[in-house]
Image 1 (cartoon, rainbow, N blue to C red):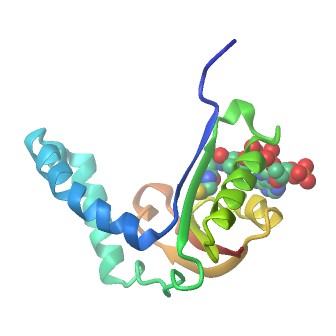
Image 2: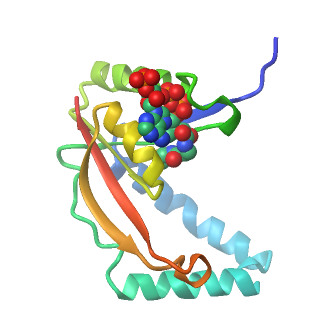
Length: 152
Ligand SMILES: CC(C)(COP(=O)(O)OP(=O)(O)OC[C@H]1O[C@@H](n2cnc3c(N)ncnc32)[C@H](O)[C@@H]1OP(=O)(O)O)[C@@H](O)C(=O)NCCC(=O)NCCS
């Protein structure tokens, strides 16, 4: 039997608790990346500059959905295995898990307009939509960022 991973769903019952864990890990990651010189590569400096400009423009200020929709998810299915029902199965299993844990709602953020229709099919709705400009320097256009939510 082939044991390759063809997709995954990463979830947290509470985004707030997840962030509390990240805060402990991030300083170590920053130190490691500085020691490797990563922030000083031209590409990374360019990207960081554009992220900084986006932040100044207020593009990372989103309405808080974590009270009604505390859980968070991220999903990815290998291109070769898409449209075979894998994404649906992963979402359904995660929703069942959250319900058993008495979680009231779930949310996610995506910059993939394509995936928004998949999530709508899975019962999600658009909670917030905004434009992000930090990819403009190489895509020559802004991209949309969506926050999608689902009550459980
Ligand atoms: C979005 C994604 C997870 C969908 O996974 P998938 O395994 O291809 O989806 P499924 O085959 O389970 O599709 C389930 C249903 O959604 C529909 N669907 C899937 N992708 C769709 C899309 N882009 N637009 C509209 N409908 C879509 C399918 O037709 C299917 O409908 P049906 O059950 O009525 O036949 C996958 O395309 C992906 O990994 N995309 C890149 C990563 C990403 O954008 N992640 C989101 C940010 S967290």
